Image 1: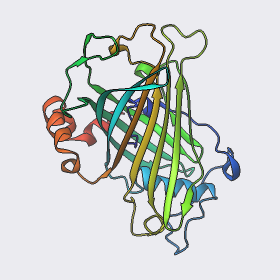
Image 2 (image 1 turned 45 degrees about the horizontal axis):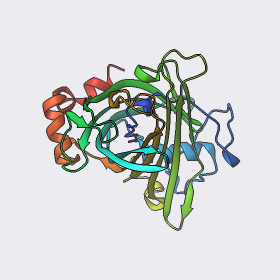
Image 3 (image 1 turned 90 degrees about the vertical axis):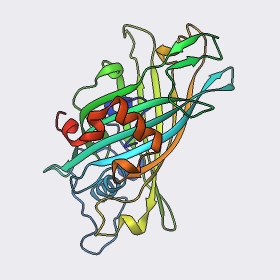
Image 4 (image 1 turned 90 degrees about the horizontal axis):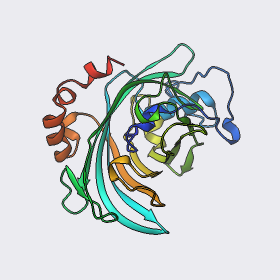
Length: 291
């Protein structure tokens, strides 16, 4: 949103840990350096330090500002290879970062999301489940604030909370894809219940793609690039859907972008946040300071 924007996806993407990068960016224990192309040279995205700093410009910022992002998405039920539309989601993430002495970045992040009616786009408080025929109460999602560390290998979190507590959590960034002036970087987040985990089996698999331009990445006057976000997620049934032992899973798809201020969010997200989370609307920095 993601940052994760993450979501979405709930906020499990806020609770990820490191996994090694493939290819030229294999996992290493060396500290990372890197610059904001301030010396006039373009980033070498095969270099760990340059890669991390460039990606931080895409998914966060280099100057300590409050970072905002949002995702608008839809969810399907997948049963016997058939898609059934279920509901939509409006998610927003709020974060702030600082560079650490070892060259990595420390982040503080939280997320607020709303489930919406597939047809009207409005907030759902009750959901007529087309699979079961039942009417379900619909929760809102607010996760965090959490403290994370961003490395060239992926994200690390000090302690997973909520649904992610006790889970196996893996996260990694794939090498940059470059076509002319376009740059895409993919983040994978894989969360699952380990063997012997008490409670129902859980699996959450998210692939988030960030897009910007090399021109913006290599512009030393920018500490944050204009970034577009696309995400896909495969997740086991959410408990509030009450799907019982039916075989299947959820498939989520969404798109979003970075925002400079609260009033850049979609009008409905602004309206719902003012009503249900007035503290978020008033001062997200104060919430991040509690992480």
